[in-house]
Image (cartoon, rainbow, N blue to C red):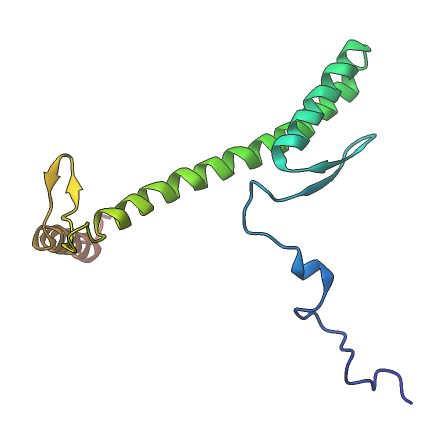
Length: 146
């Protein structure tokens, strides 16, 4: 039998590989496997951050300031990931609120969106969008002075 002639086993990546099954879209539960300067840390972003900060404190207490700084740089990376996840979460919340404002209420009537305490009708939204489009077209047609 020739090498690679078995039709049941393919070399390409498909849904049956183990790495593909364990992927998650939730960044809070995403598991990181960090290889730091002297240690390997595994956990979610917050856990890895906390561990690097603790290691940095221990290294500074032991007067190894270079190693402490290295740990703090690793911790900063995971703090940036945590901050990015929080920003994404905050950006998704207004989108969910807008969807909830347009959802049906208990009686089956569609609620009017509320902006700055005022009810906004669909006609008002269309008028604002058309005005914005006209302004954008005008700016696109106007050449800049040389």
